[in-house]
Length: 456
Image (cartoon, rainbow, N blue to C red; front, side):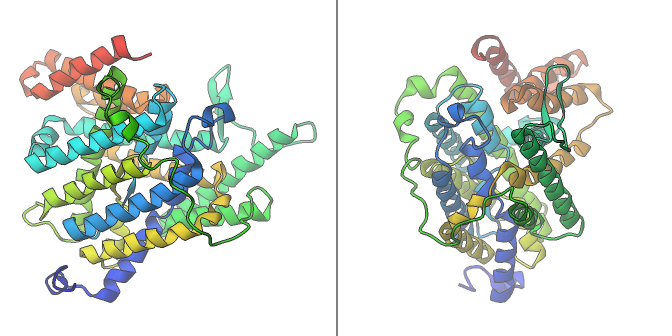
């Protein structure tokens, strides 16, 4: 094992790798609560929530997908990187593909499987690099930042901090109560205050550089919520894993039907899953590897195998019943703790397998508990805005539209489409038409068709 993972070459040992693996798991553990919460539509009205998979089944699918994906990364990519269903992509799955486009969740899972299969093919054939180079960096960063705003807005909305207002569209909710208020209004105000408390605690932990800040913040919020009667107390701690039957293999019923898989809406869904995962995985792998000192001449050793591991993890997750599984930037926490090899990933994978037996604890998961995690993830993703060339209007406008349209239209796909349509136009009238890659012109027409004919 030591020789396979090149411990001596990397200057590491079992103790350091185990500590690193546990550290990364704790930094990622929030996904076990947040992903099922989002994919099951837990914050949606009861008549809408029935069109989503069961929370318990998604929990099992999440833990298994994370474990399998991370173990594949351990033995194939041999990198200290954990994998799990990605934040942002799960929001697109629930609120854009299923809620807005009306795509059945089983069909959306089929879209995840197809997108990851394409990702794998592009990686194995070497086309990946050409596509990465065709997309301007400004739009890549804008997509990440836009998803960050979308996810943060989702957290604020779910917690009841931001509420609908007929006069101003949205506004700040009531954060206090009085005798004349209805019981449900008082409860909503208390839940919003609990979420704000959780956000402050998590922010303080992040500022103090705690590796598991998001996870610890959720635990503290849940405990305080239980003390004040705002969160249910678990009746037990350990139990057998919930059944995965409702979600396992659900994607297959649509994969054999070309008329469904190649419809206009599904092509947009597949492309969005592929696009976001494509660049998110590449950026995460390079970022984590750079921090670990694993890059050679600016390049990642076994890059093809690492990206193939990411794609395989996504395919496995889709079969199990969750949105795209991808590499997690929280892996930097383990790297900071000394993780350098794939053995770190083995430890992460084992931790996710063990977590299957702690599903009763998820009784504490409410909107107020998950909201701080979503808002903090949004903050981290929005930081990519600093890398956009804001002093060049031909770059700034497409990027801005990509970012702002996602939360305002409540659709990640619409934000991407807006940016990809405007970018070629601004470049043409700037006299820089030749600088636009042909692939971008193809995508211009694809998204134009989407806005005019396909989008309901």
